[in-house]
Length: 204
Image (tube, rainbow, N blue to C red; front, side, top):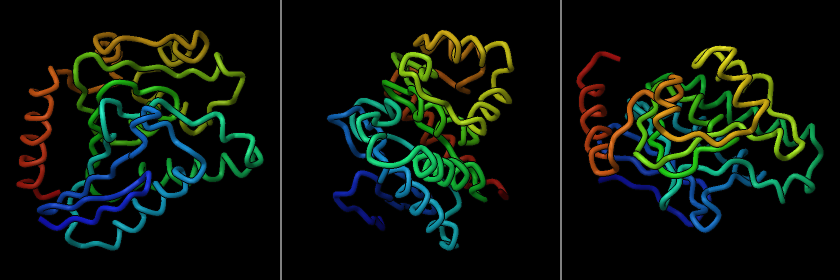
């Protein structure tokens, strides 16, 4: 097993052609700081040059995928700087040249839902929750992120999530098309492993 692990809030592990990008702030439900947006883009772009990597998984350390942006850090930079860092992470993941899979447990809210929507596939565990919540916070959700969510679930469902800021259960997210598959946690882990094996066998 070839691993590259550090104490950063965003790190990468590699095994057998699969890179896993970990969000590592479990005490904060992996809420993304300003520095983490930049680090996500840097880590993903660094993997583009690795010819051994054939698939990328995005997941969170601990019980949650990602509770969204850490709003306490928004005052540390201008709105323009924040959106530049956010878009850098978003576009790096969305344009990654190999298949990408979000493995979702617990919270998948705001910026977490944005990152999940950047991935090609989304495997989720039962009990996960979803939302697009800027209406609750008085902040702006990026237009490019809304466009991507709209392509996944359609304009009506996107507007419902955006305007209400409601947190929805996993079954509703599956019905909308926000996630591809929903399973109990252990079964979801097994399904992820099986899907990875299948994709590695394909000429992708």
